[in-house]
Every structure is written in structure tokens, then in C-alpha cells.
Length: 260
Ligand SMILES: Nc1ncnc2c1ncn2[C@@H]1O[C@H](COP(=O)(O)OP(=O)(O)OP(=O)(O)O)[C@@H](O)[C@H]1O
Ligand SMILES: [Mg+2]
Image 1 (cartoon, helix red, strand yellow):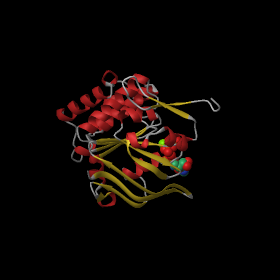
Image 2 (image 1 turned 30 degrees about the vertical axis):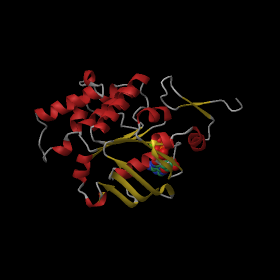
Image 3 (image 1 turned 45 degrees about the vertical axis):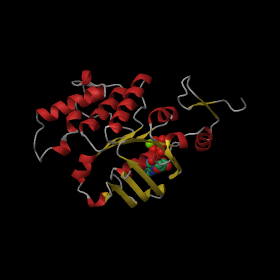
Image 4 (image 1 turned 180 degrees about the horizontal axis):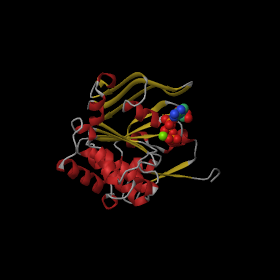
């Protein structure tokens, strides 16, 4: 299957600090691709590079076309990124924020119409924030705010949805719901890329997994091939065991105490 999102030899720097070193990456429509790796590995930087939000060397491509050759507005229509740390002090209600997701689809100076409101409402329902629609963003809990920004990305109706730690701050129930919805979107044809810190969520929901360390991709491929206890021990420098569910689901991973 041809990749919708691709990075070819992408390198990024923040001043003197190199965050990505000639990274190769590909994610297809119809699949949920999870990126895992230790803090500072370059995961968020890669998502920003794939969304064309930071300058980099090499080529980031959308549907085979270099992002540098696409108008900013078209990129905004086709790629949505939910960042790891959405602003806390956004002076809007949840509904206003989510309606902003429609902006790339509207003509200049055009206001959103009933169709846009319907899409925003569905996005809020899918992200579990419909009942928060009239609440100011800066008065929400961390997890509620994350889901409000997810709803804005869903309202954007992108072809590629990039989620940076979408389950951080969420309770177990909402973690499952967010990834279940992301997997459903992938099944319906979207290209979904999610940075995750929990290998068990990746094992449960991802079609493909990419492992990153020190600005490089160290492994990538189908989830069951890449996600092994040995690979995760090596990646995180932690001791792990892998187990299976009663019906053979998994493998699932747990950290264990050194010496046990
Ligand atoms: N704005 C910045 N200015 C300078 N250095 C940065 C900046 N953002 C990130 N870095 C550095 O670039 C490297 C990669 O950061 P990045 O945020 O991509 O890591 P990450 O894999 O997403 O980590 P985490 O799991 O902690 O979110 C790190 O060494 C980080 O310190
Ligand atoms: Mg990050």
C-alpha cells in the first residue's frame, strides 16, 4: 500500500541540538501507526515535521507530494495534529474551539454554516465532550481539555490525523475510547499516527509500530513483529515480561523489579 505520509531522510535541529537524524518513516491510509520511544527520542518533532510545522532537511511528503510544494491551507485541510501540550489558556468555549477546526474548509471570511455545526457536534460526541460544549477551555480538567482539542482535530475531517500522546491525562476508560475511535477512523480510511507511551495500548490498537531512540527510527513494521519484550527492554532499558490474555490476546507487557 502506498504511504500517505512519508519522511525521507528528515533531519531537524533546535539550534545546536539535533532532534531528528535522517529519519525514514511511512504511514498508510487505513492504518493506525503507533510511535513509541523514550522521552526526548524525537517523536513529537517527527509529528511536527510530518505536519509541515517545523523546518527540516530531507523531504516530508503527503500523498507523494513534498509538503514544501503544497499551499499551507491545503495541508491544514488534509493533516490535523493534536499536540502533546495544547494551550491551557485558550479563551474559547469547547464549541468555539471545535468550530475552529472547520476553518481550513471555509472560504476566506466565511462563517461556518449548519453543515459545519453538525460536523462539530459529531466530533464533540466522538471525543466525549458534547456535554462540555459551552464550557470555557481554561476551566476544564487536563483530560477534558485534551479531548476538546481532539474534537477540534476530528472536526477538521483530515486525511491524516496525528495524535501526540492522545491518552496522556486520560483515565483508563477514556484511553480505550480514544484509541478505539482512532482505530475506527483508520478502518474507515484515515491515516492515523499516534505517539504512545503505553506499549499495551499500541499492542491492542495499532496496525504498525515505529520505535524511535535518539532522533532515529530503530525498528518499524507490523505490531506483532516489532513489539516484543526484548525490543522494549532494549528501547527503554527496563526489565519486562510479556504475558497473554486468556483468549491469547496480546502480548501485554509489564515492568518488573530488577533482580526478580
Ligand atoms: N523547542 C525546543 N528547543 C530546543 N530543544 C528542543 C525543543 N523541543 C524539543 N527539543 C529537544 O529535541 C529532542 C526531541 O524532543 P521531542 O519533543 O521530539 O521528544 P519526544 O520523543 O517527543 O519526547 P517526550 O516523550 O518527552 O514527549 C529532545 O532532546 C528535546 O530536548
Ligand atoms: Mg513528545
